[in-house]
Length: 412
Ligand code: NAD
Image 1 (cartoon, helix red, strand yellow):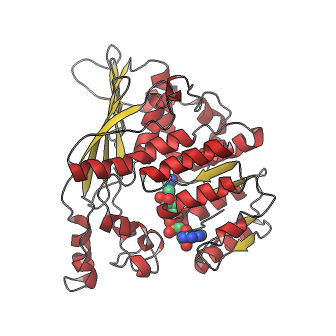
Image 2: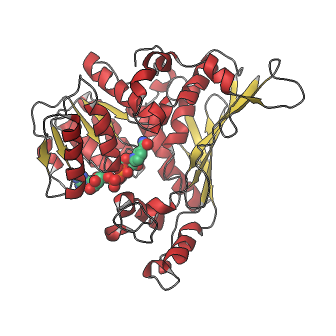
Image 3: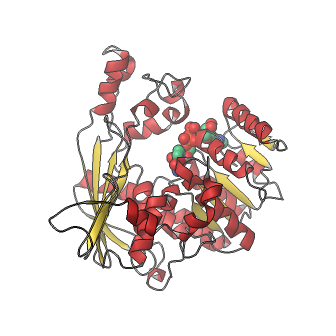
């Protein structure tokens, strides 16, 4: 495992619960995070791993170990490309990476080309694809319950002010970031200072992309993004640190709400929102709409023509979500207990591990990861230039022939 910060430790705990996985080595540059990880090994009663630390390129030494079947990368976004490419070049055939393949479109192309050249599987560990309600809705979409799919929505709507700005020793209220920050405040906040776009599209796009077979008979064609002004992070600093605090002078480039529209080859549109700097309850804002009705996650509501009560009335989605519970959840729900994020973290790692054991392709592959990650640089360009931008086709035309094998049975 490369990177054992808060997310890496989460993966560590879940993997140490499994009987079919040995974590032989971990790498990080933060001794505190390494110690917390060793405590997790101890608590699980597992043998201590080899430790690689001391400099930002210590991970290259880890990759020289001969006995590795796979690597999991949970570092800051700006490290992902070189760590993924370095892993496949070192001969690792399975790389699980946390969200975002890299920063620029060139980064994403580099990962795709390296994976193709070395015949390696690069899976983005996009856990929301495995959320129970999302999978039940995927099941409904595949059974035609919504008719033909017309429009989808999703996003990342999560008040991250306390994560981007904290007291520097924990994720508690504060105004520090960069060198003085804790966990994601050390690095993620800098992206809000320097970049304006949908910086975190994958939790919203991953699930809906599966519902309309992106890269498997369909593809993203073009995108247009719009950004609001930036107020939330500055106001938070002033409220918690006072107008005289040095960070009150920082100008954040990231608009508080970034809205993106995507046009797809088969005629659907997707609306995505990135909303992380303002007070609000968490919601990914899913909407899945077809010719026969729609589901929206926010109010747990559904409307199906001919089934729901007439008169423009919403129904609770609960009975439908129970009836169409995905076979994967029906089979594995016991194992998900305590796995984090409502159980979906179990599935994403389970899929990765099972693919390695069976020597098959991972159900989410490098083309998924690249298409989803591309939204960030494309949205930055669209906002900067004020125009619509075209998506690259990372599959080089193969999208017309590829089949969707994500969650098609109850195995993984
Ligand atoms: P974090 O800051 O807590 O952890 C990152 C770790 O990487 C730190 O321990 C840091 O010391 C280490 N690191 C930095 N540079 C390194 C290097 N050169 N070599 C080795 N280690 C290095 O952040 P996090 O919250 O754990 O986020 C990590 C990744 O996980 C990000 O991509 C983030 O977006 C993703 N994430 C995903 C979810 C999810 O639900 N899927 C949730 C949280 C975070």
